[in-house]
Length: 90
Image 1 (cartoon, rainbow, N blue to C red):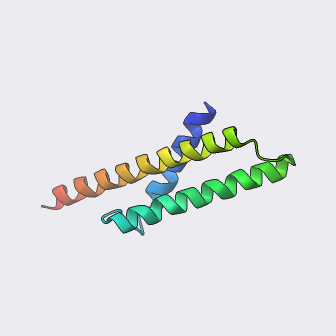
Image 2 (tube, rainbow, N blue to C red):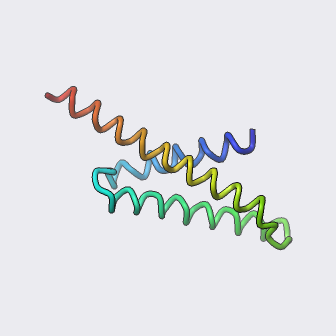
């Protein structure tokens, strides 16, 4: 459930970020993934600070990997939404 929720959280986050930054170019997609990764790193750091422990690299790398997968799904969802909106307008 933990992994699923990480992926879902970042898919929704990047989908929402894609409203002001439409993923229509590779640069925009890279910015969105970068923002998702930045938020993921900040979240992991805050989590480690609140638990007062040193990073255990496998768990943090797993979480960040799932965050990136979720961000990619969010970009795909945003691109699909844009395509549907464009076809509805034509």
